[in-house]
Length: 108
Image (spheres, rainbow, N blue to C red):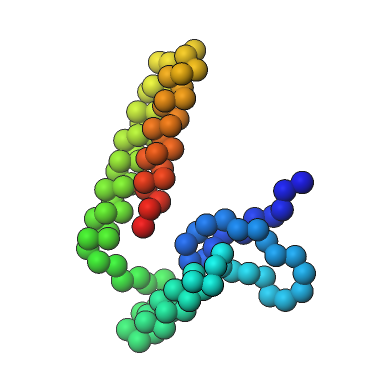
C-alpha cells in the first residue's frame, strides 16, 4: 500500500503525507517554506493581494515558450500514436519525447 501524497504549496513537488500529531505539512522542504514566507512578506510590502504575482517579462516569456513547446509535442504525440500504434520502439521514442518536453516545461 502506498502512502498518501501531498503537493508542496511552493514548488508543487509531491511528498509523503506525514502521519501523527501536529499540523499537516504544506511544503516538501524547509527551503520551500522559507521561499513562500519571503514571497508573502514581499507581496505584503508591495500591497499585493494573495492572488497577485509579480514576475519578470523574461520569466513569463520563458514559461510561455515552454508551454508552447509542450503543446507542440502533445500534438505530435497524438498524431504519431495514431500512426505507430504497432511498433513498440517507435512508441517508446514518442513517449520519451513527450516526457522530455514535460520535464523541460516544469523547470523554473
